[in-house]
Length: 93
Image (cartoon, rainbow, N blue to C red):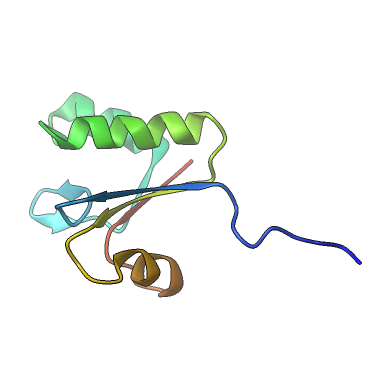
């Protein structure tokens, strides 16, 4: 018998916001290189920078996916993880 982990290493940041906003639009998925580009372009500002940096550090450390979700919504983690659409932004390598 072989056991497999049910959850791969991931990071979820629950914050009072919906995710990463690109000009007037919530982006559902952002790659790790895009994080640096968005910061350089000034798209990510203020409180979004430490959240994005935290996700980037996790990705650099081997975490396969990170999520920034709206913690104000009931069942936010379940919706993000177990639906196709999710409710936040997933950051991937």
